[in-house]
Image (cartoon, rainbow, N blue to C red):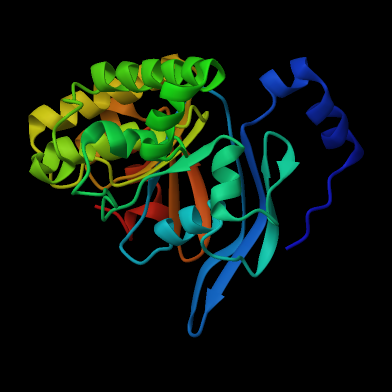
Length: 267
């Protein structure tokens, strides 16, 4: 995948004002094919700041594959991905996390034998044992650990989670909340969430909805794969619909349902 930038893009990436007004993410001509199936066929789109995007489409349309490409877990056959105007095609998943992109997965991927606090600490990229030890032996590390703990305490409050509860003892809805909190823990401004409210109660759907709205108000851009149409209607600023390798944009769920392109794939 090429990582060439235009002169205008390079100038924008060095200009703080341009950076604030430029898209968080730019995707150009992204393609991914498997034997007998084209999931992405020269897909291009941009994500603006402080917006929530719902990524929709039929099962097998390539939604998770698209997120996997954006986060570096899958290589595309062609195309360019820019984060904050900078190419990231050469970066590994953990390196993309450090640039401000974070991700949740359908299968939760929590460490169920560890506490909620330590899952959040790991999500920041820190080793919990290492952080606690350093906090005891040096003022420099102590101040850093205090700052880190304040971030975690804020997340615990935001998501109404108990710090010392073992993650495996949480209800499924609380585990979903924890996965979203972990995605937000590194302080990145682009969150990619794979079915954040699938199979959870109405109460937890509401709590996740409110938390995502607050994250958006604090500056985050959020992309979420979701089939829950009521949830999408309540939270999405825009809808991206993927079908037969092509991506269409809609401002409302009703507009999506009225379009023949989407109507055959989505009911």
